[in-house]
Image 1 (cartoon, one colour):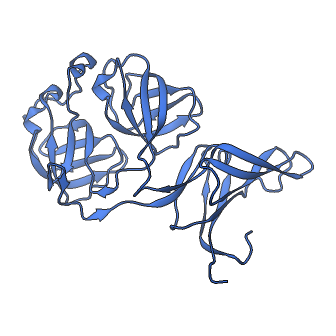
Image 2 (cartoon, helix red, strand yellow):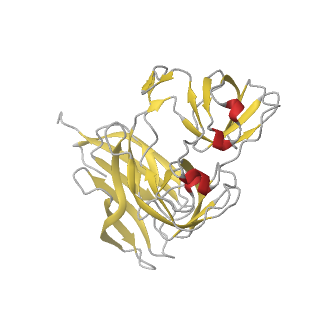
Amino acid sequence: MPNNASALVAYGSYTSDGNARTLEIPPGVDHFILRNRSDWGDATAVTNVQSEYQRGQADASAQGLTQAVTTNILSSSNVTTNGFTLIDSSSDTLLGGALSLTAITNADPPVASIADTSSLANGDIVRIYNSATAKQIAGYDFSIDNIVTNTSFELIYMTAPGSVGGATSAKRLAFDLNWYPRRRFITGVTTGTTTEVQLSVTHDFVVGSKVSFRVPSAYGMTQLDNLTGQVTAINTTTNTITVDINSSAFTAFAFPSSATAAAGVTPAHVVPVGEVSTILTSASQSAAFRGIRIGSNVCGPNNAVMDWWAFKADVNI
């Protein structure tokens, strides 16, 4: 542990799923320690049992302690990739590095194939772009889940998009958009006396929110375009909102083909009432946060309980 020159400002624990994750922690943290509680003192396997970050280290780096089989002897190590990175969403770059997707399946939900998942965590947001054969989802942001290490992940709130072909590019969003409430892309609509709308990224609308819809003709349901409704229900499992709009007589909502989208199509989306031009007059709360990204080389093995401590230098000593 740090000496008396450091003050503990936050601590906690999580159960690792083997993938990177982001923790929200107080601003100004100078020292961060992560310890593998489950494997500490266990001589059955070599494991990185403790990792540390000190302000001034390179992004994605860490200093670690590795525990040897049978002897329990600890040895030091330096991590240079997929370690710790401090995050300030109010000033940091939104988009991360490029991700090469070798394929996206026409399934519900679609599965994206990728050879390197080390920079990804369940719950991350990725943006699809530069696609030659999946134009209908190019420019969309998607929440992801069910990562299979160095194999694939799912676009969890997306229905089967139609023929999507081969290689596609994506980028991970380092964090969600800063201002609440946020615009969200539409991935599906269920019609009825009320209307249920599925959104591509975990949303933050609440019951009572007023929202307006933008649905270009390429998506079929032109009757919903420019209508405003009030959110009457939320389903967090399917990531849907239900609004008080009777859509019983509306035509079906469907994604355009890649060929149609190639000519240029604005994604169907929902916006909080008050968005005018580039000014979101109803946005009264900043969702910016400070935290730390815990990379795949230090996050801990699957099912391990990981304890963490965040410290700030004590300038009053």
